[in-house]
Image 1 (cartoon, rainbow, N blue to C red):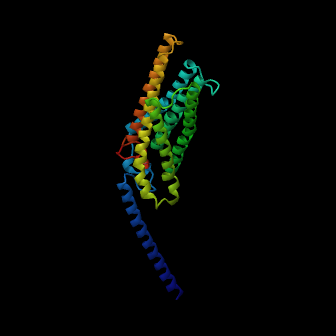
Image 2: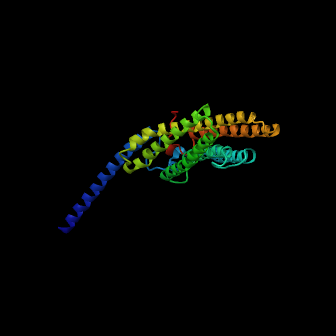
Length: 295
């Protein structure tokens, strides 16, 4: 009697396991197909485990080239701006010297909008060595670190203009900067709530987060190009002021012209390489980032 009960219990257990496996396979296949239609790999599957995403030697060389070149340019533009301000603009100060207080503006804005934001975008797109949730946190950390730089840079130019009795928001550069700051704040808030807070209810918010990805990615790239355009127009505006400064020798004026031109060219190159890294279809994290072909 006991043996018959045990046999029936064993058969029932095996049938239950078969049903569970069938259900899991069914829902797993549907979820995989749904995610593939959205442009990614199966949920829970790492990019490196997908055989369709296997890299050849040229892909790895391109990957390393983008990382090395972008790092040199993003750090180089900040160092070049520091060199220009320290050696040709008189260094830094706060309210005790309005002219030197203004010098904090280009340094902090380049650090926040270009260097830190550029690294944030590239790390999110190119980072392959950690889980996707950690990449999101790193992406948010770099953008969060840019916020105090941008805030202090804005306050420095505001105080400097007040002390020198200059008009506010009178040029294309100032209005572009205002729009760029507004879009940056909007992007940060939307990204924080859409891709980190909503993970508390991951399954229920999946469709909403999937719909937000191309919007967030496209606006982020547009915001970065706005920052580049703002920085370039700021350099042009400063160079026009420098050309009217009678206290500068013609030699110093020429050197500053070369330095600001080099900064402007570097900014354009950064914009190009960041765009290339984000838009490249075979770039290393396409399965994780889901950047579509929509701009």
